[in-house]
Each structure stands twice: as structure tokens, then as C-alpha cells.
Length: 422
Image (cartoon, rainbow, N blue to C red; front, side):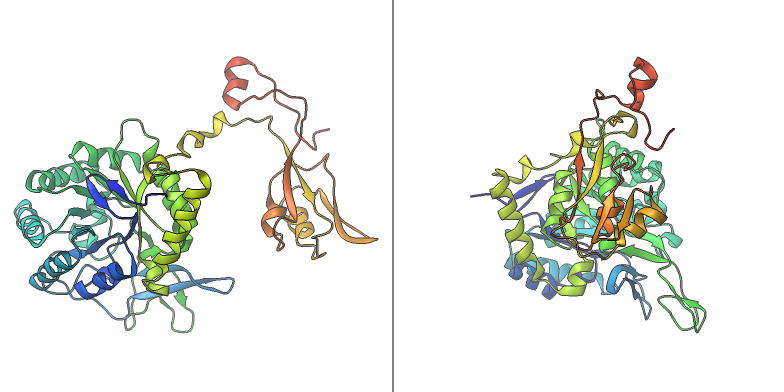
């Protein structure tokens, strides 16, 4: 029977599914309902000096009919009194002693950090998450991503938190940087017990083209917000993997960004996350999504022979390489299953206009013809095909031994001829 319990930087959890610091983790009653639904842990919505939020504050990006495939917010940290939050943390911890509560924090001075850390731990926090990622509003006040984008500041404030904390400290990193690795290493130098990433991405999600105002609209103005939701998953996976494979890093990771189902969670775990945090999908579908997530993860572990989460963590990292190490002599071609093909010709249009002109219509059949001598195995036809498994990319034996670009440059290995080169 697979065991879903996990450990992230010393924070024990009955399963790897945590609520991220966001509106679904804004109050004690919300988090209590989440724990009742089966969530393993929760990162409380960021505490600090209470602020005034604006209206409206959310906007969604519709992609080919899928509403809120991308999502943005211009909401800031909690606007509820600190003492109210602390009282609800204590009550929630009393009711759910086995579910970790990680308290997200964001203040300015060392004295403020010392004070709010003590209050959070006294209330029952099992861990702290330092919010170094907020890309709007708070960064304009010298907090959030203004800290996360400066490794020296990240290291210094992390050091303050670790000095004053008696529970594990996670640093939440901003994706609004060119390279995540220096920022993860800064958190490590500061003494962090782990990191969480990614926070939201600085963005403008759209424009009201009748009023000429960006979205979400606040009166007659708007501002950049934090982009999240399913559409950011590829960016989040890259940054998680970049840290997980960095030999000097070595800290546990709580993965965040576009997780909407158990498969997404598995991908984050295989690339180095020991827990995953979810916010947008909960906002769109509610707390009960965790039931399918747990069931799906459990079945995946059973069918793949994993007994514990830690056996999965980072399993895909050895296969994540630099481009120069890829085998340039590995070759695939597209194969179309005639029995499944519906004759939509989408692969023909995509190949002719966007790829390498190797798929052609035929007069006597609905099934296009693949000119394998010209096919470069780019996958575009498979991506646009609406029928599952109708087009497969099949490896071919071209008679050439494996050779990477680096081996070609430094060892003189031979690369196969380019297709289409005459």
C-alpha cells in the first residue's frame, strides 16, 4: 500500500497536497474545510501589516474556449487583522494537529520579522514561508519580489528568519528573474530549510478594448498582476528542475504553479518537489479536487512500484540535460494510423505552413501521406491531431551511432545528414 506521507524541510505532512498561500487559505474556517476534504497541509495567506485591497482584483485568460486557463490577481497580503489570523491559526491547529500549517510572512525590518515570527510560532505554526515573490503592490513597498530579485537581500532576510525561528523556514522564490539558481542558492546560504516556487509571474492578462483599460479594471486604471493557473505550469516545472539538478543546492522543494490534477503533481514530484501547492484550481473548482488528486497519485504509485513519495522525488532529473548533450543522431518519423484518421487534414496544414512540408493529402483516401524521407520528427502533426494516438512518432534505425553536439565538436563524432539537404 503506497504511503502518501512526505517531509519537506522537516515539515511532516500526511500527503503532499498543500493549499498555497492565496485566497483559499485566507481564514481558519476555510483551511479547516480544506483539511476535512483531505488536504495534507496549508500555507496561510501571507501575514504582515494589514493592508487595503482593491476591487476588482482577479481576471482570467480564455484560451480556445477554456476559461481561466490563465489567471491573474492584483490582490495583496491579508487584509484581516493580525490577531484574528493568529487566533484562527491556533484554533485550526488544535482541531487538526496532524496537518501542518505553514504561515506565510512578509514584513520589512528585522525587528518586525522577529516579532511576527514569534507570534506565528506561538500560535502553532509548523513552519514559515517567507514571501519573496509577490510581483505587484508589495514590491513597490520594498517587499515581495523586490527581495526575491536580490540574492544578497534574500540571504540577509532569510538569515534573520532562521535566527529567530524554532520551526523550519521555507523561502518562496519569485519567477521574475533570468535564472532561478542564484536565488535558490541565496536562500540556502541564509540557512533556509527548503524553498517553494514559483510565485506568480508579473503580467498584464488583457485589455478592455472598449474602455481602453488593462484588466482587471479598478475604476479607470489597472496595474500589472501576478499570472498563475494551468498556463504557467511549464515555467514552474523548469524552475523547479533547474534547482533540483543544481549540485550545490540540495534543499527540499515545495512545487507551485499550474497544478490542477494528479498528473501535474506527479510531474512536479518527479522533477524534485516533495510537496505541491495548489491555489488557482481550488479557486475555480473548490477544495474537493484533492480527492481525485490523492486517488490518482496513489494509483500511479501502485502501478509504478513506488512505496513512498521520497522514492519518486527527482526521479526524472537525471534525464534533464543541456541541449548540447542530446543525441543528434536519434531520429523519429510520423506514422498515421489509417483506421483512426478522420481526414481532418489539420496535420497537412500544420506541416505545410508551420513545419517541414512532408505530409501531403491524397486524392483516393482521407488519410494523408507522410514522406518519411523528408520527415524530421518535429511532433507538430501529433500535437495538432484531434484523435488520441492516431499519429505516433516512431524511432527509426538510420545506421548512425549516437552523437551529441558536444561530442561532434570535441571528439569528431559524425552527425547524420540533414533531411532535405541535397
